[in-house]
Image (cartoon, rainbow, N blue to C red; front, side, top):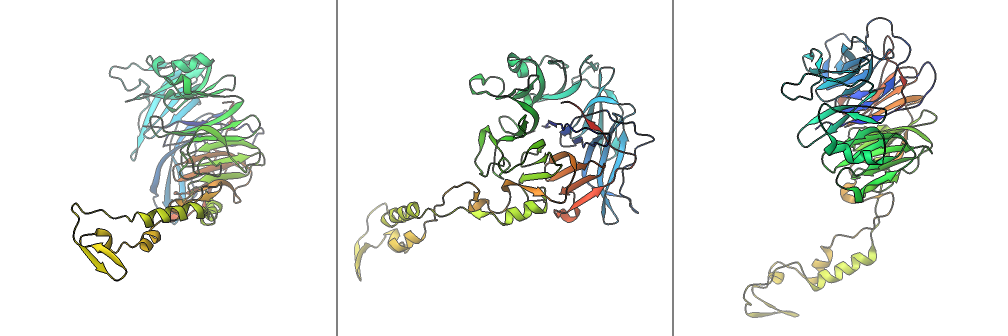
Length: 452
């Protein structure tokens, strides 16, 4: 099942840049910028054929075209190289695991598949049903993915309306009761409305739906039915997240799941956010990058690695632990025999021959020592079993300055600086180390953000 994550960043100036989408289904939305002369060439330079590390990504170019690129390694360095570029500008694109869907300016929706051999031919998008004749949606301005139980369909949105290749009202129709839809997320279980309200809950759960106002950015990672993680930015520049929180990916200082959005702690004023579902990153008004959550592959940078190593273990609750020890001493963890055996007198006690507590050496003192200390769950602390990775409080990534776009993906993070250099860290780095590598993008893979 693919996942769609759409966020945008409002940045003005001729030299703004944006990273768009990932093959895992993540995406950013940008509008047209200055024209890019000549063919696209994305490379960091190499002397041997690159070995593909992490599949395909998608970039939106300054003239509105879309490029499918791959990450490889050659001569000891990483390489970002384009394998295909669209022949014409597009209104929007959705890059998925095995294909890219394009909304052309004439209203047509087309698809190109890609694999290790390259990019396939362009063909009309027909929702993968037998006998499909393609799909046109005049007047639409953006793409959204609506997912059912056994299929994923791309719909076109614009002017508050949703147009799909076939009837999808059973999935997203209930959300329309709140007003015109700006975008859909997570199998139609969440939506951003044109008036800036965000609905979370989805069809069939009206009594449990959450309505949050003044929302300007949304990023959602979908892990299947009723299992989504999302973050959003409100008009006061605060960040709110919800969902599973085992790696601290909600950034509220705890590891407790929250089905209602909770505010991320310790952030300055934020203009953009992106979540992979296991970690998240944000850009503040100064262009600095902040990350929180899982850090196993260095996806939250060196600062995240240090924060993970410096976490405090939750303190022991002495009173609760002592009570548990007293109960264990009075009731040792051993089974009673089916039939009582004969009594045997020993030193200072009497026991039965087949008494498992005596046979196994379960004295009251041993039972006390066998009790695992009970710990208090306080904000910012980590239980011993969760100590190995992740940090629930945002940390600043000092290596990145003047960022204008951010993309959190599983095991990796990409950012784009104002000068057009793509910086990535996490699983794409050499040997999986959490160091960062920069990619100058030749011929300007640059774009200014749109208004999503």
